Image (tube, rainbow, N blue to C red):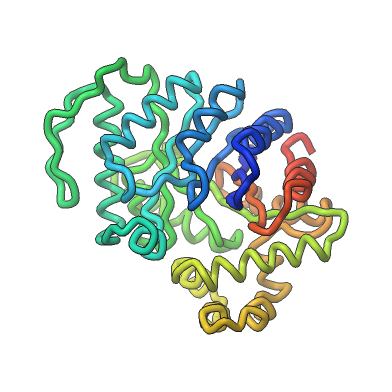
Length: 333
């Protein structure tokens, strides 16, 4: 059976309490994990701590903490602390993000994202073991660090993001899980093949890698409004958040992705959104009436090798629309 997770809204929320309340709503609705993105609002660790203290059963996860703005040792400390605070319910999501975020916002050179992510995962695992960390890599050189508290009895899984085939293959070789976004069901099948190949190369069991598909969902009584919100969300990510999402669409056969990107970059957002047509929405999202959204999510459940669907929400959705969607596509429905 495919798990049903939720990505809490990435857009600015009025208070920490409001974000935690989303997590509690997800817990009440039977969702398996509440993932919290970290972008340019509140830092993820503080909010995850509040979520851990005010929920009881649902897993909580970072989606994602980038591998540039915190050191691997600090990420290991953070994972150990949140695992303790949540009483074993934490899942550490890591990823390199992209140059727009890392260089423009954090002022750090983007460098080699795949190698940095792999080395970060390896160092975090050493930290969580409780043993002294001695690591000699291409990106990091550490010696002498050791937790001055008891390591977690059960280490939290370390799950990574990645868009291209090589990044996904590497996830299959070294990570406990992989998260894919901006992928159709067919696109997910292709990336799962990359996971399987990576697991084989790493002499690992494919079942040891949790595969999660992030799907933008908007289920409203007004289906036209739901689809308009989803269209704006796709247009923003393909056109305004670097080239990763554009490239992901192109790999899946959507030649219009380049024109969407170029139009958005040129300031012609109206044309960019026109190019996000009904087919793209149907293929990438679960948007429309509650019944339509549930049917579209079921297409992902049919993908062999997919372990979880993480429901996310359009960046323009307000609080009522997020809650309406969360309820409409909850596991209990």
